[in-house]
Length: 287
Figure (cartoon, rainbow, N blue to C red):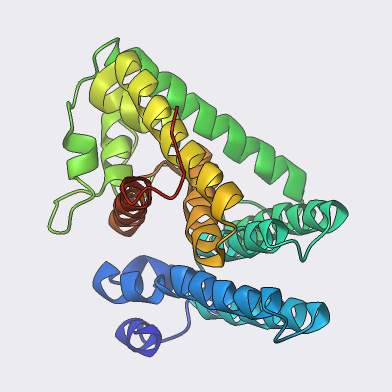
């Protein structure tokens, strides 16, 4: 699907930024399955390490190779968020798998921040959105200001009970005329040709208002809390991998929102797995 995506636009988006906007979701969505795929492979390698089949240095090297493979794969399409998702997910898996120390986690986080700034800066230069005299820090500041401005606008128009009542989430489904982030652009009367991130709070404010935000955060906290308790009790590498996946997208969703159909699918499937674990009675009590 990676090669089909590249062929469908007639070139590499990383070499020509304008091609990225011509990519078809039907081809790119399967490419992004590399993220949970790498997570599951990493959990297998971690399990081998815990069984003593490979050494700590070997599992760390294999984690590094997996991370590079995943990042290079999505980098060819010039998508920024999946790159950060892979890096963040692998750091979380490695941390809970006890093959990374705290200072290494901090270093990895700093690398991630630099990657966000660097990729965003280069993309803006290629699209002539900024001049070469603009600093990377200024670009990041403008992006943060714009995102918060969007959230403020969504809050103003949505009130306590929202205005779309589920249509924002429904727009994530295949076949929708406008995707959720394009719908945000339409709501704030900006433009619908590009995507606008609503933030994690913004998506529920638009649908169900401030009450929706409270319910969403309770549900998200319950899912993440359940996942954390499961990995602490079972120490199972598979549960570490799936918890790392949803924690990664929860962190990234602070800005982007949790709106993509495949990410919603991850949360649904993993929530179902957690429910099954609890019902099987492995000594995990959620209260």
